[in-house]
Length: 217
Image (cartoon, rainbow, N blue to C red):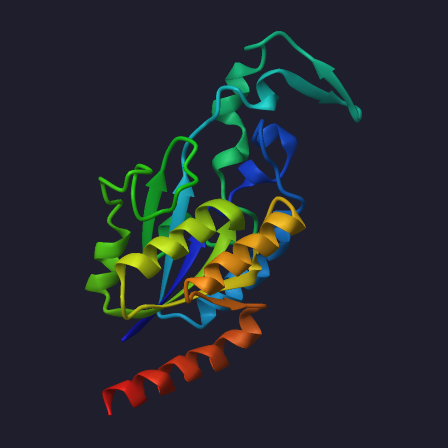
């Protein structure tokens, strides 16, 4: 059987207000080491990458000059949207080409990485790929925990009966402590394992393996 680590949208688009007009996260680059640690525990590593460029992003209307924010007419910096590094991976992560598998999402994709739409009509191929790899454990980290991370974990839980799903909090970031705690509670209620960091994951995997052996016997 196979353990798969999934990096969900670990991109610069979330690192500052210029990357996303609605939401941004405080220092998500701090999770890079944890993403790499969880990948070291896995046989395969998957990248979930959001390739959408938001035309309404703050970088289209605001520029920072010596620490002072100046407003500009809408569209003044529209050329920046395609050239800024919002879609690039956080520093310290592998090149997208070095992942074992990569999926691209587009639009304001917050409903999970298993499907292209919220109604779950068109698969992204993630579920099928995990089945082909005979995956029995999936370790998830990335951005943001309240949205794509949690919803991906929930989709995997719903559509894969025998998959052990671990969300690594050390490799995730949320928008606010309150919403993060609520999301953790919801995932645990669904039977999704939540680890505090990568160091705790091997013991969780051993426990799951022991439970499965008891079921088989």
